[in-house]
Length: 281
Length: 230
Image (cartoon, rainbow over all chains, first blue to last red; front, side, top):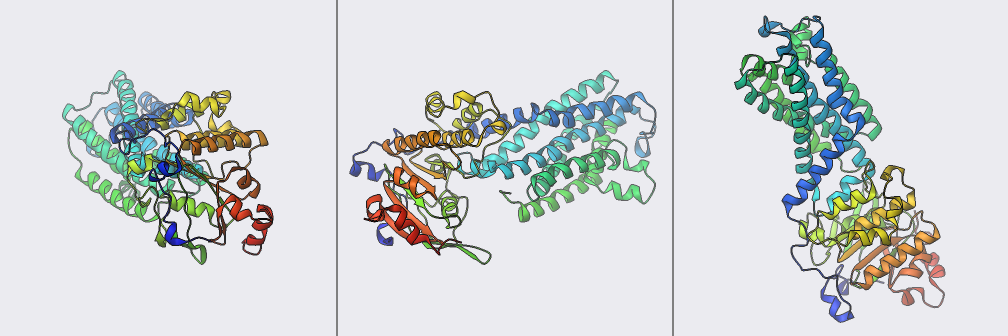
């Protein structure tokens, strides 16, 4: 039987002398690599994982590029509507494709990854290493930004070949919009990937991406739709991201309404994720 | 771990659990399925917080312990916790980057025979191969304490013998090795110190000889845990 007074937990190096054994040659401090090293290592590991994953590349680069090229080559449906009436088609189209790319990486990719990492126990194991949960979250954020950078450069380059000429000032606003949108969609990914079974996450994350791509105000501005659908779709985070990027890159302006909609979705998703996210399946 | 309790809904997983492990020894936490072995390991590694009681690992509370503390503790989870789409050596090399001075990875990989399936992704490994990668992940930081949750579950006798040798080696180098198992056979081969758990309570605790007594560990184990198993 145990004697609580004598048993206060796992005893450490102090016992080594008494037992005459040698502890692993290790100092008391500096055993963990510096925080920066740990987070960058994990971020690189995750980014390489995302970029070398075939299905993920399909959603994050190939499908957005297909949408870009296909919609650039045809005249239907009309994209230059509402505030963008009279703008060049490729200039209205490209911001929507960029929004689609943001959603694929920050939402679909992260939700699926999270769902399966919970299933496999990866989150729990990494939580016990010097990286920890905080380091893991930081690394995930960095990896999403790194992958987004690759996507934006590739899509931007192809769009430029097709004649895209963005507003120079708008590029800065667009960058802010992309980071805000990626944050909101990553939080939404945490709500989905952090709560449901991995298979359900896989199905739903892809379904939501396809539905939003088709009718979520991303490629086709919500204003194309008849009322009251236009109003409702305009309140989706996908439409807000698309509109924010279009206003920035076509007009060089700031769409405050879109920012507000994104912020509201972000706060809502953060609250839900904080309340319901589970680290294991 | 002292007077630790943990409830899940109406189930009392741990009911005042007290035990300890010492450096340089293999401590086997032995008990039937559902006795509370995994819960105690998860509490000791900071993955769960006890409802009451005191837990100290290397003198620190593992719940929200800092990275320096986590660097001194190696963990092998029962479900492995390995990402599935990477190759094992690349994964271990990656994990080693979290430590300032990790173990000699090539030696560890060779010792566990992981080089034999280095080109296969974790997803396609057999259960035994995965167990070996997970064990390597627990030892890659040269831990002062290693918590190994059923490290030989599903292994064939050869791999089992190899894992036992590695755990003994780690303890010989001064690590406090904590191994959970439901096999008294394994405890008999491996343990310096045995803690028998049933229904969330410690029912026996001492050296292998003390716990096994004259009747042998098998007899004692069944006597202690019969009726206690859920």
